Length: 128
Image 1 (cartoon, rainbow, N blue to C red):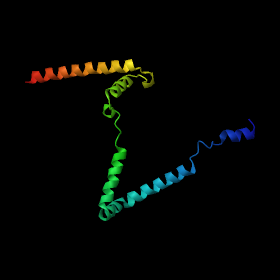
Image 2 (image 1 turned 30 degrees about the vertical axis):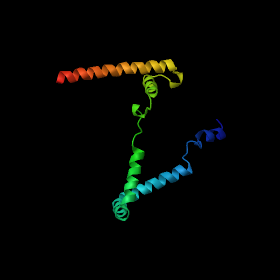
Image 3 (image 1 turned 180 degrees about the vertical axis):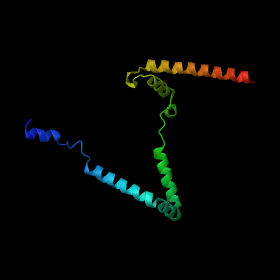
Image 4 (image 1 turned 60 degrees about the horizontal axis):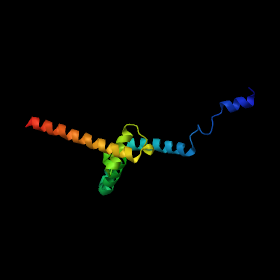
């Protein structure tokens, strides 16, 4: 291996190096964290005194952005969407589903729900 090839071999590629933006962001975040640990309580106290409404709005925004997005059946707006979600939950590819498959899944879900309701009714009857 000649010296030219060797130097290329040991040089970091541009893709491996953090960008100037990443470096600046990391430095800023580190310094901000240090200052927050040092002065955070004082800053919060002053902010609550000066503008409690703005602090409440900020907290609401932070909470809403950190809340997990629902990915269950509560996002479904129709029986068809429920059937598709059920099929996807067992590995079906949504793009491969036919209308017949979706209809069958909907019917199977109806049977399942009816069976669950019967079990509940039986359990309630046993408790009375």
